[in-house]
Every structure is written in structure tokens, then in C-alpha cells.
Length: 161
Image (cartoon, rainbow, N blue to C red):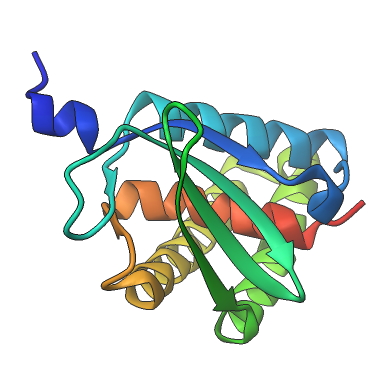
């Protein structure tokens, strides 16, 4: 059974601002849904020096900046953090290229080719998660798996319909 602190240090809801992201193709929508489901199922998320929680997170683009709006479970606004997308541009561009290759490969390539592309995709995803954790250091507390899944959602913002 999870401790009270573990129950407080987690996300119970994650939403993407529809005005910022639009709708994606079926593969993109599937990735978004899986990332949100996975975040809700298992995550570690907290605010430094705050004993509240659990939390809800809304991710959007505001004036070309990434916005993390954190609220209490009851909807009370706690904090908003705006991050420049500039440090993420290369990671997003590279990840988009490898995802395109991956989706093409799963339709026609050999299992060995798919595995090789997927290994590269996971490596880029890990690098992007580390960058996100670094950029949020001192602002939000999250574990590596949560950072990976949130990067999936950041990448979803790039897929503006």
C-alpha cells in the first residue's frame, strides 16, 4: 500500500490545451492517450517545498512557450511555469524524424530493422526526458519515467493539427 506522501506526490489528471495542439493523426492521438494513461497509472510529481497534492497538470503553448499549469486536485491554481521551447527544438526535430521512420518501418520493415529504429527512438526519448528534468529542476519534482511521458506530450504539442 502506498504511503500518504506517495499518494500526495503524484498526478491524478493531465490535460493538453486543445487550442495549442489541435488534433493529430491516429498514430499521434494513440501516443498521446497512452502517455496520459501511463502518467496517471504510475508517476512521481510534486512541487518543491509544498506538502499538498495530488495534482493536476495542464500543458499548453502560451506565446510560443511551453506552459505547465499545476493545480490541486480540486482545481485550485498552485503554480504555472513557462519554459522556452528553444532547448527542445533539436530533440523535437530529431524525435519527429525517427518516429516517422518507426511508423513507416512497422508497416513494412523486418523485425530487426524495427528494433534498431526503436532503440534509437528510445535513446532520443531518454535524452529529451533528461533535458526536461534539467529545465524543471527546482520548479517541479518528477521521476525519469514521468519526464519521458511528459516529453511525449510536449512532442504532441509540436504536432499541431
